[in-house]
Length: 180
Image (tube, rainbow, N blue to C red; front, side, top):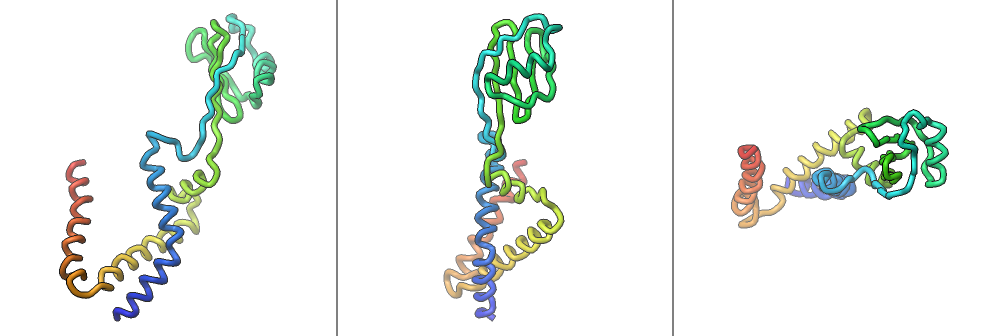
């Protein structure tokens, strides 16, 4: 029996190593979304746009002509969030301009290569077959964990040191649940 457990533990462990590492890395990234955006890199720069104070003179053609020299394209829409300010929505971000000073803040966002896709997998956005694979992965992690409990004999096995560590490991999430 122990030999079968060792084989299952080893083979599942090897097969799912990549998935485990991906879920660990993306889990850490998702835990820290307040500090860092794992999906997008945001580039912010200040430019001079010099739009007229009279908002009746501002139209899509004028805005497009003012955006081209600063390397911003794809004007989609615009509105006035407050008097003296116009906010433009462009293909990869926004431009917020102070009509009084002529200065503008250009915010452009870019998908982070690889991290964006890995986070989408972690959150199961592909659905369909990925749901099945994720479920199989979860079951395999349970099998790896349970088989690992019975691999070591003696004082370091499950009946001695192991049971103490299992209880300690279960206590942490229980304390977290109680404190919520």
